[in-house]
Length: 317
Image 1 (tube, rainbow, N blue to C red):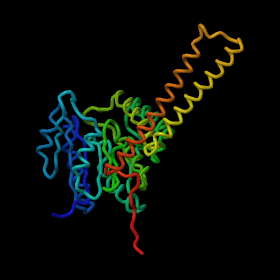
Image 2: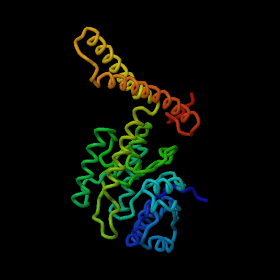
Image 3: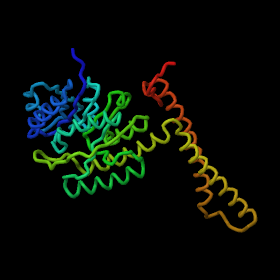
Image 4: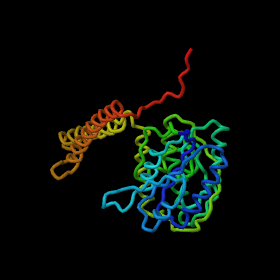
């Protein structure tokens, strides 16, 4: 079978009104690139007839996800993860199914990748056509992400991206982690770039962006920050914090004992001795926790396929 050069992954959730147009525009656009391709739609337990519409498409792979009953649907991250892991292409394109990111932008991203020798090209929705609330929430999120994790691109939330297959190896997506995928890949040493793309207003279906996504994304951002800074030595964080607390508690006890011995203060009704002891105990616990987490991380890297480094090139002399 001919090698597939491009795999397009598109999560589907209640997008029955957009599917046929999306598929036609994707097919026409990918045909124009003269590259072999596949299109993978990941049906995300829609409540409309999206799955029935997908089954009528020609020339598409359809992944319908099965979930436990207590989860009415997956997050977009899990849908993307399923599609990416099923993809066979040398290049993997991710795109939303709401047609706000035009499929016709894909050749521009491909050219940017080839011209600048990039491993990932991220779309930048510089002029967004979303509602006022979504635009401003996204701006706030971008400011926070830039301060906390410095992702290297302007628009982490844009789903339209092109990845070389090797950049995605060893990465699992869950929660709202797809928003930080570009940052994770950049931290692994791959070359990431971006390109301004068109952004259209939604014409069919309803947006799945809710307030709870914003909060989940905020929590995931701090997880990414911790993993970036302390994935190889968590003891540097928890050990230092533990030592500082223990030293503060010990210093307070020494000072309180000195003041009590010389009759300067009475400790009979004081809460400060209890606070000092609590600081010592908490500090000790933090330090022990850091050691245990350090051991767990070392075991993780020694037994899993994911490594701290990857070999970019092997040049034989």
